[in-house]
Image 1: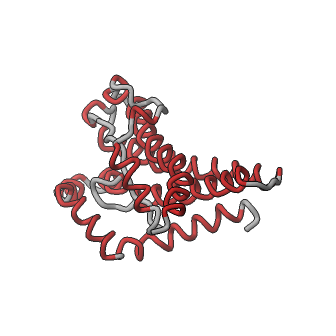
Image 2: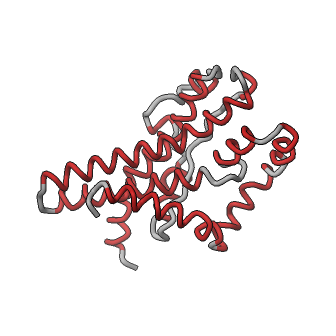
Image 3: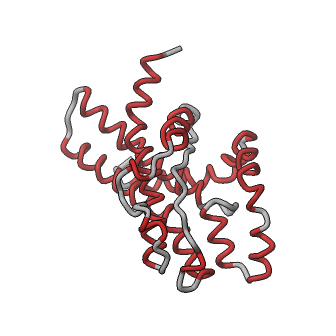
Length: 215
């Protein structure tokens, strides 16, 4: 077992993974408050303090372990949203759901900026190489989480968005899938089918982001 490699991987992925997952949830909370539901806001979930959102297993352990597979997966404490409090529940559900992946895409661009500044400034040494690798991990983690969460399966954000745009009858029928959604998702991940389905999208998005760095 390469203990040194494991520790290095944890050190590189810890910062971007924690912030990617927690700011994803804060994005949901901000959007819910904006559209009329203050449940998450009253519970302090609009905070960007990771401590407000961290689930020890889903936010720390699982992302670190999955980082070795090339497919980072994780979760934070779910943001409570009372959709009935939204001004237009079916319509506003789309924006509340999209806010999480939107936050991840914004963070991916933020890490691109960090990498650009570092590469432009130049440097050498362990600290410089470390932050370059953290920025690279930040880009990858946020793209993976954004694309994964936009997959149209309940309870993922993509499933919420799909329910929002479907006609009422179809939306109701599709919502009945939710109790089985996590089981389906796990099967898709374990079988490799999910990587096959969303891998090209992640690859294209990463290619465009890296092009901003001249790669």
